[in-house]
Length: 166
Image (cartoon, rainbow, N blue to C red; front, side, top):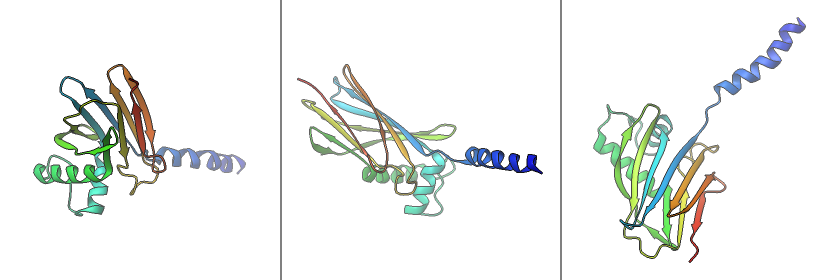
């Protein structure tokens, strides 16, 4: 009997840990000095994105190839515009949605900010999925010239800032 109790005490927490889902996205933001543009690629788990779209927009949305891709692009664009804010030198910039592609477990979304002159500061505010998943983590890697910095953003700490020395 003691062995059974010990097994339950040890096994149940381990099984629960195995069922725990991690919520995170990864964004790579690279400043291209030739094009004067900040080019961004964000990877988000497709099921998490689907759940937030179903909660916010329409229960029938599917984030996969079977769904109307033009509609899906519209949802991605709208969602990111409200949840992924880029400021250059203190000024909010419009995100230009380029498109998305599906990979095995996640959706890869492509955006850019154009016409960047005299870059001194990049600020990214990333609140993707944090309203639906409080434990959401958003990793942001920013690169401009020789400057590189990585950030772990959460619901409580949702801004990444990279300053450049003159």
